[in-house]
Image: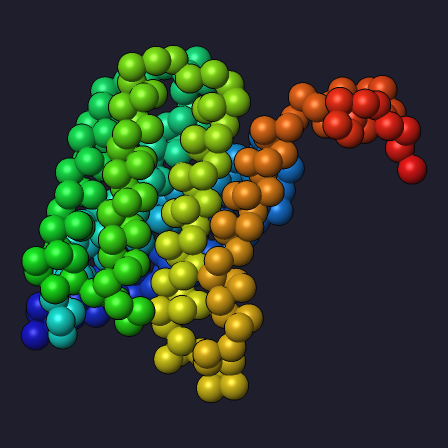
Length: 236
């Protein structure tokens, strides 16, 4: 009886963490980047995603078809490394980044092993399992790069951005695609749910492109011209 109550309590904490993550993540995206409201919403998002990841790791082994807690641990990894990147304005890594690098590489290996030999799967098949393992592997290698060399300001912002957006995708994807049974019958299977689930990737792409061409955009605003093919063109 006590075990059931604990499981129910953890489940409700997991749900609450997910709802707060969806709300705070949306606010963080909407607010001016670098501002106080963005930072506050981002802090709430990080905290709620940590709750989401920890409770997911606790609940996974107790599902009807037991799962691995590694997925929940990796959610915490993405959020913590993104948050620490924003905190370390000098671009220099610390011991947290070194532990995170080992966790990402180890997590990628465990997730891939589960997909190959332990039958880990998703409603969409095993593809997402291996995709998640690949993302964790890339993240770990990027951690290693950050440890070996100091990150520039642009690299630090990119690192913060893509990790936060990927963590947000885990929240949106889990809710809009993984919990359709709790949504109204009329919207189940709707393309709108896929748009909402994958929206963090669109936001990520927009800001990464904007960051990549930030200097060119700033120069064009100052000169009132847009450079096309190396030749300045007047703005329309």
